[in-house]
Length: 260
Ligand code: PXP
Image 1 (cartoon, rainbow, N blue to C red):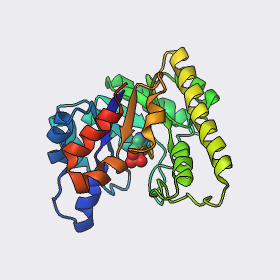
Image 2: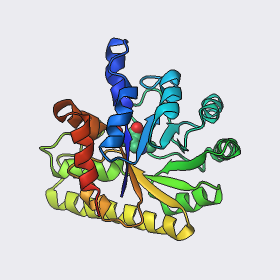
Image 3: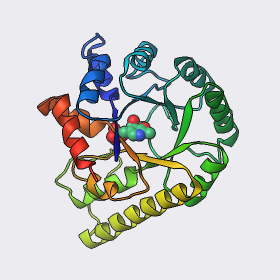
């Protein structure tokens, strides 16, 4: 299982002071040496963490392939086309959200998604669609010509956190802690089965499958068992752990958990 490390939160820390420390650029070599396979960043429309200059330098200097997450906004897609990362992952974006909530609605935004995919392909950038683990959506993602999908694992991660309620919440929307344990266990199994069958369906169609959102050192093992998933993109939990262990150790620990 390959690991993409999302380094946005290094820029989040920098933005807390609006200075140039810590620099996400300094993470590139450390993440690569710790055995990760990819650098993932999100160039948000509101530039709340990664800025255009960061993205430009990361694409230019990263020893690992760069997966650039972005919205389907025309201006953003133009910037991504200029930057030419290895891959662009199209995600939904709402300014008021804390983090990406839910997958991209490729039915509602079909025309804009197609336009974005065409532009990215014309610039030799492979495309991934960050979508919910839903069979119909996956079939459409394939029809739209994406090479990859990334399955949103937030729902699984939330239920896992509810079941192990002594753990940190993975998402601010976790509020159903009063659900009985056996209900949560069933829900957790169901959410895993949804991800498993979504990944299998995508692989049968010939899509390459990544997954991410809310994955951490405690909930990742069950996802690693799903053979059709080739890659995980993980940010929050790795950067959070790195505050205590250092980035190299935090990445190495996750790389070890992803070994099959
Ligand atoms: N994948 C995508 C498409 C995302 O938008 C994010 C969050 O930026 C992640 C993975 C990483 O999620 P987390 O920070 O919860 O590990």
